[in-house]
Length: 242
Image (cartoon, rainbow, N blue to C red; front, top):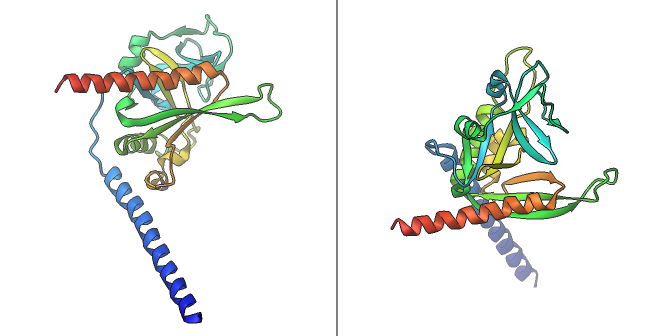
């Protein structure tokens, strides 16, 4: 009886070891391939995630102002702190809106619908001290190339060295459906780390990007719907080109 139990235990240990080796091997191979992937520039599309590099935008005097949860790119006409976006009514004396065509032409493209496999929304309970009882999270599941593109951009912008005395800046993205900006999330410093990229290739990971908090359900729905429409149009266009 004991011999049988020992054999079963050894077999279980071997199986667990093999599964663990496959799990770590898959992560390692994915990280190696993504970190060395040659990435060319891409053009804006129907569903585009732009970068909003803080240092370059400060030089242009561009700033993101969020009103009613919708981001707008504004040119600042007077001196002010660029560290975080403004919330509330637009100040027409201090800001003027940057034409959306110029925004699209200027900002670097990080991701399009081609680099995203799936988008979905999730409802979560908000903190008890907030007036809203809930908020929404938009999840993006990226392709291998999409993970590599986001990681490389985060390494260039978030993880780059700052000069002595240089103040930290929030590095943001600007998500647009067509010519309508819908979200401007801050990039977490974790995204620029090697561990983040490696962990994306774990079989346990379902979501690569989480955009939150979004308190307006319709905005979250518009983002998900915009991705689905863009993805379908892209597939139809690819089929028609064959």
